[in-house]
Image (cartoon, rainbow, N blue to C red; front, side, top):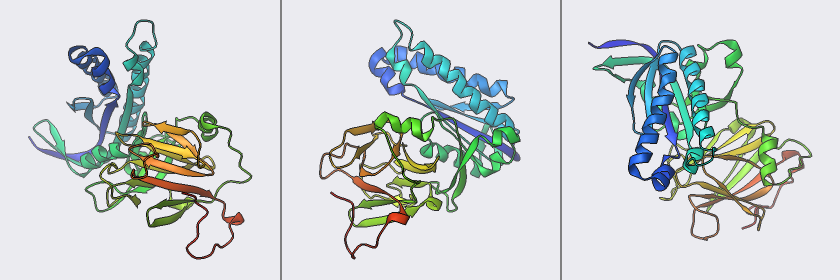
Length: 321
């Protein structure tokens, strides 16, 4: 029987399972991944949802209300934390510590047929996973409207993001549970700000653009729908995302091959694998490979303070190669 109704659609994707197959072998790794997906699936039943299907390393579920869907997503992350904590115990596979979860939710009219679901909300939720970092929960504005005010305040706007296969951009929000920008910055050295930055400059080949705070987020990727399009086959469609949060710019890797950052002209290279770091000063972002090979796709960046910026002669740049 076919039904058409408004539903909240949730997609969850488990990352880091490749390492398990390398360390445990196919049979045991398959068992661990299946068990983990089944475990996080318990959050669907516990919040009144319906598990539509499992998808190898992930799952799809639907809920009557946005509140139930978001509650389930939060519980999924709590359940995964238990699995990861077991990976820190003596004798446990170190691969368990690498497991991460991405969850995306959208709401809209859904066609339910033969136990499966179809529709724009299904497509949006599935494609939003491309824009999610490790242990992130992304939701659309339609989902946000239906959650309680105390939960709503925990979400931060990423503004409108172009979603693959959809003409109109989607207003996306992220659950703010990550460490503060200052804490993230200390991993890569002390950062001193005389004032909050006003913008960021990105340069790849002849593509030289300046983005102000109101332009955030910036999606760097191969897709023509990306904010900053880099037409190189080694770059993922949605490879990395730059956000403005807590008075600084944050770079999050969204790719399979990783994003690499080198601060200054000869600083240490930071490897981001679905992780984030604060961008400060100037440097180079390597997409898919470390910024060592001159032929690799690299984007130079410079964090700008417009109040301190003096006009430069045409064709010149403060960014050094």
